[in-house]
Image 1 (cartoon, one colour):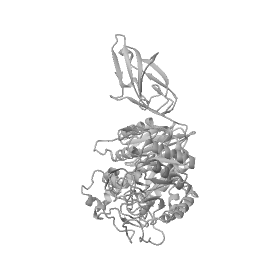
Image 2 (cartoon, rainbow, N blue to C red):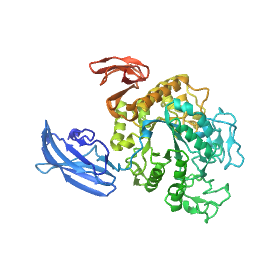
Image 3 (spheres, rainbow, N blue to C red):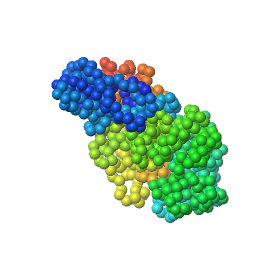
Image 4 (cartoon, helix red, strand yellow):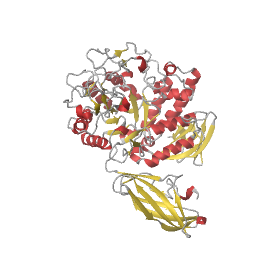
Length: 626
């Protein structure tokens, strides 16, 4: 049978599009060719979380051209669920055909829409900072009395050291970035159009990344004090910038006040006494030497998130960690390794955040399609309306980089239509509030710098030390900059919050951790690139369709990609050419005169169509000329 008998993205076959709230009526219509001779059809449903299977008869609905029509309207379940469906068609002679999607069922996400998603995050621009490496301010900190062994670099521009060269205490090299330094940079961030400041962990820890928390109640003294944090949040809010904190709640540091393996804290921790109030938080196979740890890393002992005292401490109590830092000025939490946190734990965090600050936002770190994620043998419920508001959009990153390079990570050809398909899969599977609240990015602290990837492509040094010493050639850098500018246009024009990893806009390079975590090059920035990112930030802030407008694909073939964002009669078109050869596109244009907002150049409009010239590796942002 021809696959066009059913297309879940075609309104002739399915309405409404994509994920739906609980109890929504869904209409499905099959359109098999008349010549196939089908006389009846049935919908086969599997409700995964409810554990139910249903077979529902479809109603013959006449013909349309060469197609027979069979239709059904059914009510989505009253509770959030993940539905999988196929169809069975039957001929007069009793023979049947199972209709599926290339051997797989179609997906129907059903979510609870009674808990609203704050829309401020998805509308604006996010800037991610690795606090130790953004900016110094004031005197260099005194290391005496701080937990753990730390080494402070006197020179901000000293080269990075690989963790394997730091003995038994990796990631102990600090450059002295501070919260006061970030505060000094707020004017700069405001000029970039930033509306959300995402900070990697700021709580006390003996490592420069601070993902091995030592004390959730204390800002790391090298960064500053709680008063410094409160002041940063207040001054950021005065510039309409909100602060997102990184919550590392799946594990602590072994040198934390809770585990206290090295006796850094005066009160006994779980590794020192089984009478410690923190002992039940951890799972020991043989106390105190053997215990569950994140990915088996002994410095990161895993916690039992659902132990009542841990849940009270992090989430439930009036002065819980989640609540107290929201009261101190934060407006959002990002959950580290969300796929390793129990669903109930995440739901408890969201509930506490709604009670403490109803407009606060909860983001999850998930690297795959979050609507179908399976972790530790369990299907996850991140996006069903009661847990995270949105997720880090790593699928966008992979698809965008592959489109810009013309090949995926395995080296297979990758074109505009592949990018569209990847994004349409998310748009169909995700609830609309989650799709429009995704954190889109080209890189993060856990990936190589986008400029390096885009400039070098597959030319990656095999040896880690060679990568650490690597510097792009002038040709590689020039190519990388052209592609990065195009990627930034895609990032800022697409639904979801465009997220910049600190220094990308300044032209920072680097392979994987720690090469991607260098110090911000104050005084040595790529000024043209900075200006371009600031322009994109102003356009994102000034053009309503880019903030929350609907998405319409206009062209996706080969290296050429074009899509429109529409809102209340206003249209903005992003048109991109990732190929080397020059190209032209003629697209429908509902307004009158048109211009490229990136250059101010007027574009030719005739008979309701706009003519767009696209030199190799370039793009335009079409807006109405006023």
